[in-house]
Image (cartoon, rainbow over all chains, first blue to last red; front, side, top):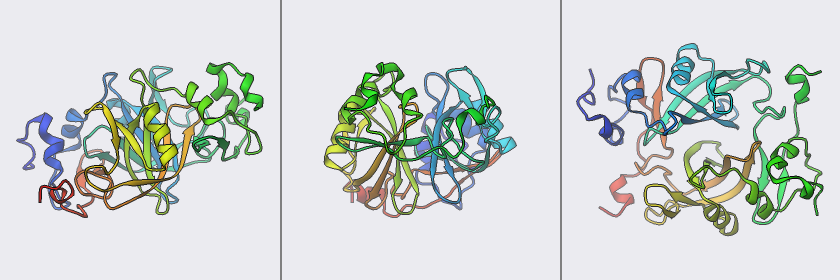
Amino acid sequence: MSRFDKIEPNALFKALESATPADTLPSTGKLLDVVRFNEDGLLPAIAQQYDTGEVLMMAWMNREALEETLTTQRVCYYSRSRQKLWRKGETSGQQQQLKTAALDCDGDTLLLKVDQTGPACHTGRRSCFYISLDAHKALISSVPLIDPEALYGKK
Amino acid sequence: MSRFDKIEPNALFKALESATPADTLPSTGKLLDVVRFNEDGLLPAIAQQYDTGEVLMMAWMNREALEETLTTQRVCYYSRSRQKLWRKGETSGQQQQLKTAALDCDGDTLLLKVDQTGPACHTGRRSCFYISLDAHKALISSVPLIDPEALYGKK
């Protein structure tokens, strides 16, 4: 039992704002009941390499993907284009091993610390964030680690 | 001029996958014309502390917010609840100074490296990601740096 178990579902994240590391929190299952998935049932999930801190990618999870990720420790997203679960690395081999997962203050975004095998990006780059912008100009900031055609078995 | 200027708008991010740091890219203005804002005209923007690598928060930007951020180097989001531009720190004083900005491979997410003054989170914590989850249990992983009532002038 947790002192937060009696809180109305729509007030739970507000109540957790004043919680401390000493508090017993509701179970993960109860938290997932009130997580603020968007109108498509999805949460944005940021993947960060756990030891270097590099932000690798952002993708989406439905409840099933998040539960599978927490259970198996292998990151599974929901592919909006393919409309199905997407076990990261199932085609490319470039898996993400989950280290830690955290929800944000209002329960609508996830931060995953992961151990990424090779490139996270389908272009073969380590990170998806490679188009640097300033007020006027843009620049490609990284190069592929691996030819993407090799990643997806075309070579 | 850039060799990418002749590419059809909906094929530009695909064409940039094979671009290199030596390429001259379309201007920021031209890229923003094809950035994949969602149906509400918004992009998710991840804020990361530039030197420590800590992921601080995720919020949303419309084109105006992104242009202002790139021009002023002070991070401006779009508040979905207030439906207006939200110059981070305008109430709390906890500003974000932009260091670098990057789009991801498919042009629908931003990574901002920032220098955050004090806490990024409205709860007074440094980062918004403080509700750690495993398959069964949840735990609060950080405490406020500042009493949130002090941040918002109630004390």
